[in-house]
Amino acid sequence: MKLSILDRSRTRAGAPDAAALTGSIERAVHAEQRGFHRFWVAEHHAVPGIASGSPPVLLAAIGAHTDRIRLGSGGVMLPNHQPLVVAEQFLMLGAMYPGRIDLGVGRSLGFTTPVREALRRDRNAPDTFVDDLDELRRYLEGGAPVTARPRVDTAPPMFVLATRRGLDFAARAGLPVVVGGPILGSTTGKIPELERYRDNFVPSPGNRKPYVVISLEVMIAHSADAARELLLPEAWALAVSSRTGEFPALEPVSAICDQPWTPRMREQIDASIESSIHGTPDEVRDELDSLFARTGAEELLASTSTFDREALFESDRKLSLLYRQ
Image (cartoon, rainbow, N blue to C red; front, side, top):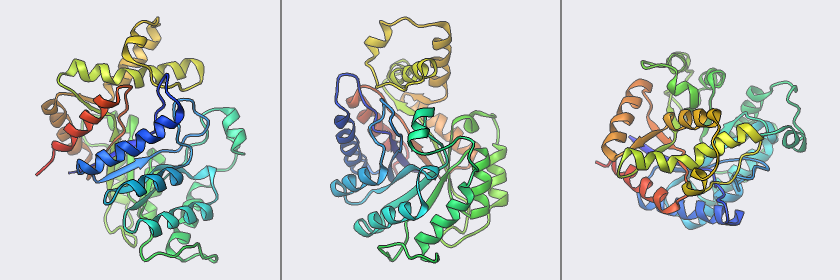
């Protein structure tokens, strides 16, 4: 079973944003040492809690500090960019780090109305994701009227960060998918959306078979209660954002416990933590085995974050051992 990491360059209370970026680089080095398959970074614009707004820039820095691990975007939000520019950025990365670059693309717009306006995105504009995806692919593969450069021997593989509708797009395009969120918890049995993706998958160059990556938070500690506590900073930030419209930096658990919790926030925090997989190594292994069986996934992309960076690195280490042969 392939194990990978999605790091969102989460900022932390009391630390400069730059520390989140150096933290991502350090975590990628650690992930390579622990044998993880991929290390991906995210794109978020003008979000106080996330320092990375440009995956290609961060990936260039991470590539210079690592040697083998695959690097990619989870993901580049295609509505925010011209396909030619995205192709050029990732072809450059592919030329600098041959055989190590992935391009994950999504279709989310900005987090708030002011951010969408700053990105020149109208929420009511026509959805051109499918056409943009096809155009981007042609640039990468050298089949467009304009030749994106630099040319490389092998173009970075594309992945679609898929919602229910996105799974249909990916199946028709013959592309691998990354899925998470409500889809994973929608049933206790096989997931219909993933079954439909596999049934409708059209083989394409480089992708003869469907490929599913599941993404969610996975926290491992010495006990389930300790793992749950480590998930609290991220869950708290999500609850705060739903109330204020602003996604904040991670806070220490002690500071969170000292603040007032409304019943609604407690409900949101509990739901957020329950959507993760957490506990001791044995407990997490059992839950992951069950999830892999339900989804038929080939890979896990763990999107875990917490305020305590040492605990995060230790959780990554324990996760890396679960499927070690």
